[in-house]
Length: 239
Image 1 (cartoon, rainbow, N blue to C red):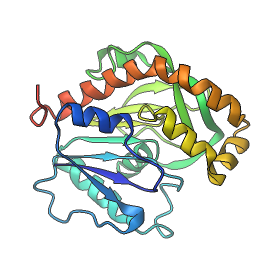
Image 2: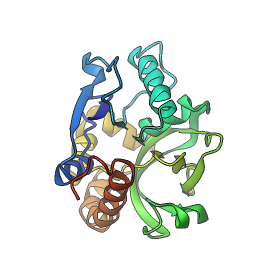
Image 3: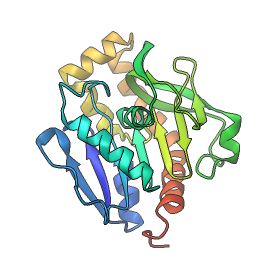
Image 4: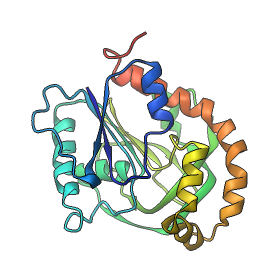
C-alpha cells in the first residue's frame, strides 16, 4: 500500500491520483491536519507520496504531526522504500536528510520555467523531459540540497527545484500535480489571494494562463509521474 500524506484540505494529489488509478496501484489517503494517525507498523507500507501545505517544514512545535512525519520519512528512507515529495513534501524529505529549510529570497508563485540540470539527462525519471518547461510554483521556503543528492532542476528564482536521493527518493519543489481546478481553488481562498499578492503576481492573469499552461505541461507531468511509479513501484503496477 502506498500512503499519501496531506497537510491541508486544499492540497490533493490531483494528476497523481489519476495516474495511480490508471496503473491500478493501491493507495491510501492520510489527512494529517484532520488528525489521521501515521502507520506504526510500516511492513505493509510500500512507499510515501508527501503533498504540499501552507506551513513551514520547521514548524514542528506548531504542527506536532510534522515531527512524527519526519520520523516516518527517516524510517522509509532507511528501509530504501520509495518517497515522492511535492513542495512542502520535498522540503520535509530534505529536512529528514539533514538539510536546512529556510525562506527563499523571493516568493515563487505562478507559471514560470524550470531548467533541468545536466544530471537529469541520465536520470531514469527526468531524462525524457524537455530541458526547460513551465511549471506551477507556489512556495516561499526552499531547502539546501541534501548531501549525496542529485540536483535535477533549478530556476532563476530558486536554485533547488528537484532532486533525487538514492534510486527512489525524489523531491519536487514545484507542482506538476496541480490541475486547473486546483489552481482555481487555491487562488480563490483568502490565503491564496494573499500569497499571490505577496509574490507580486496578478490573480486573474494566473487564472487566465492556467488552461493553456496546463495543456502544455500535462503530457510532460504524466510522463514524469508514470515513469516514476513504474520505476519505483513497478512491482505494484499493472503493466
